[in-house]
Amino acid sequence: NAGVMQNPRHLVRRRGQEARLRCSPMKGHSHVYWYRQLPEEGLKFMVYLQKENIIDESGMPKERFSAEFPKEGPSILRIQQVVRGDSAAYFCASSREEGAFFGQGTRLTVV
Amino acid sequence: RKEVEQDPGPFNVPEGATVAFNCTYSNSASQSFFWYRQDCRKEPKLLMSVYSSGNEDGRFTAQLNRASQYISLLIRDSKLSDSATYLCVVPAGSGYSTLTFGKGTMLLVSP
Image (cartoon, rainbow over all chains, first blue to last red; front, side, top):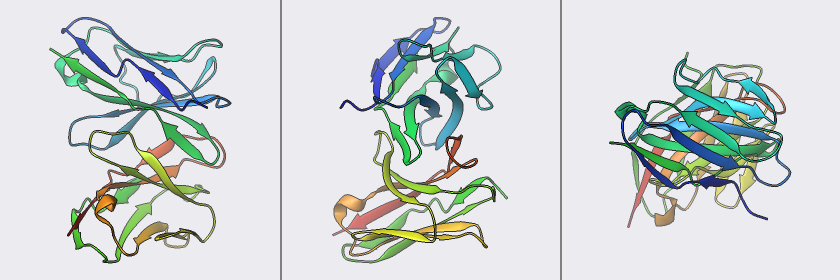
C-alpha cells in the first residue's frame, strides 16, 4: 500500500520556464492538499482539491499558479514562468478523516 | 488572533525531561485537531490526533481545551530522536476540510 507519491523529488528550472509537480494520493483517498514551504518558514496552504473539483484555492497566488486533480491520473500543480521566489519545497498530502498524509515533497530550485 | 499560533522555540531540554507545547487556534468550528512532527528537510508526519478531550500514545499526550481554544502536546522522558519541529494542525471544520498548519515549535533534546 504505497503512500503519497510525489515526483519529481527535485526539479531545477530556469527563470521563465514552467514547472509541473505531480502527486498521486494514497489508495482510497479522494482529497489532495498542496502546501508550499519556503526555506526556514512554515507550511503555507495553497489549494485543496477533490477529483475534478477545486474545493479551496484561497492560498494560491493569483497569477502563474494552477492546480488540477483529474478523474484519472495524479494531481498536478503547475507554475508558469517561474521566478526565483518560487524556489521552495512543495508538499502534497492526501486525506481521510483521521488525518492527512504527506508525500516526500518536490524541491523546486529556480536558477 | 492568528488562525493557529505556536511558540517557535527552540525548546532545549536534556534527555529524560518532560516538555510541553501549546497551540492556540481561532476557529471555534474546528472539531478535531492534529499534531505532526517534521524533521529537517523532510515531510511532516502525523503524530497524534485529538478528537475530544485528549489522546495518549506512549510518551506522548495531547489535550484539547475547547473553552480556551488551545491544544497541548506533552512529551515525557524525552529522547534524542524526539528532536524535531512539532506542528499543530487545525481543520477549518468537521470532516474533510482545509487544514491550517501552525509554524511549528522546534524541540532540541540534548544528551
